[in-house]
Image 1 (cartoon, rainbow, N blue to C red):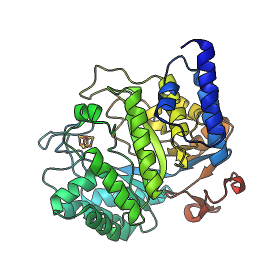
Image 2: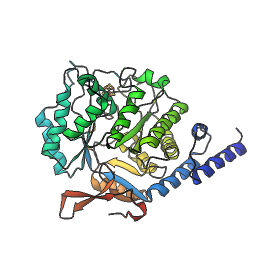
Image 3: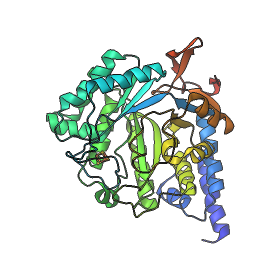
Image 4: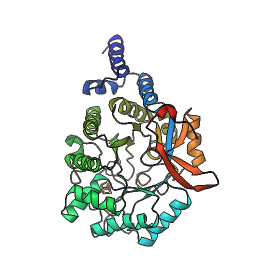
Length: 388
Ligand code: SF4
């Protein structure tokens, strides 16, 4: 395509976006062509981001809990899993889990992000018990727990339905679901990465069921490995289709692949330019998802901060005890202080706002940082959200 044609095609897309018309597969593929200006795509994504979320940059104060790294599956991109008899395999005790809860409380965390392996010998009751143990002892902390892959495993263990598992976990204390396990939906890619674990129809059905019972979930895409632009756009469109039906996704998180210590270690990790393009294209394609997150653990701090001008409005959390991507070679720190994450957002020209897991504003006691409560939804009227 010559430059004049390319410019005309981009103007067409820009006109659609400005008219709030939905982009289609061809539009998305065009935006991934390397000679289409990343700067121009970024500006357009930023326009959408500001229209949806104003000048705010969200963050939360959270911690991770990976109860076990022992897993029956062997996803090629995973550096976290261990075999049952591996000397580095672990399964946390109740006391270790309670210790994490106490630490989270002392640090003012509003959320625990709980995901892990599918242990060969641990029964459903063990996983459920982790949720009820934490909820009973730390009732204020929101438990964002179990990817669709784990919910699928629990169905296999219990021989019940997805709905039964989700309702039972909710009764135990699960508040919402993270978006992991989506990887790339298209079978040409998924079958190369993780052919045995929850397949695409199951992932979609589990999130649909969660939304139907009133549980909010997040959604993700793991990019930068063996997939092509077509697979990424196809993935985004499948998410968009489900969101049209249920409206239950809160935020989309593009996850940059890290190859170190994985079965795909011969690949290079995606470049910063690819990260920013994927961020911007995601913002433009997912017109019905309110928030786009730049997960700094995987992107690196500098790219995540820059992404706040390429469609992202959220940096995730302060994070503690992240293992999954650090095992895959992530060079980012193990956590950020509140001052550091707020500074990153301010330096990017955005107003830092602390949110809880379900995107309500967090109000803290000025005399005791660890005391907090949730205020109004940040999405009611973004124009009224001011920096704290
Ligand atoms: S990605 Fe999850 S399911 Fe796959 S091997 Fe790793 S821990 Fe197991």
